Image 1 (cartoon, protein in one colour):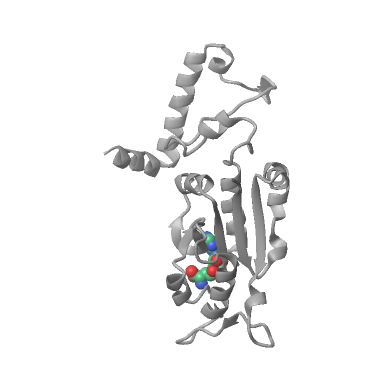
Image 2: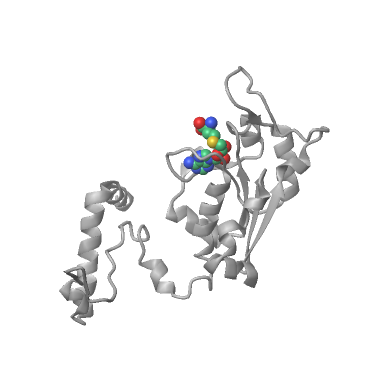
Length: 233
Ligand code: SAH
């Protein structure tokens, strides 16, 4: 069973984009996951293929129409489709590695990419869309956000990453940011690799890495340590 992504967008040409290359691209070719980019405009009903209209109550910009989007979603994800339906949205719950892991363990995702000011609220409620944000900033459309989400998911699919261990020791996987990395040359512009890393003492190396990870997390993301404490009660 492979991970099936259906993306609803006004710009299907943006897919697979960056996900057609490297690890994700190879996995796509190998059938580890599949990607279908669906043109929302194909579900418009008028002669001009309109997908948006002016906001009720006035104001700037345009809003994507509930009726057109509902048709597109119902086509991509008919009744009984077990996949979660996501809406990329700056108002959504911030994406976490934990949610990425859940998605990667599931059958796939149906992902709606917004444009303009966003989508009609009634569509979000009627189709029970899960709003997902990739951060506190505004993109011009949901497509780059969908690519980010899929990139994070696909690298966790079985057989996508050659070295499984590296997936488990990374930032966020244990509530900490990752320790710093070094590789040859031994000397770079007068800076050496920390002594312990070339000592061959694996226990010491593991301790050093853990201490560095904790220090880095305390300095840069104390909120992560706080979250971990709350989770542990
Ligand atoms: N008027 C909206 C922003 C619309 S941006 C507001 O102020 O909240 C247009 C589209 O880009 C959104 O519908 C959404 O699909 C996408 N988008 C923008 N920023 C995003 C983010 N941080 N995370 C996920 N999707 C985002």
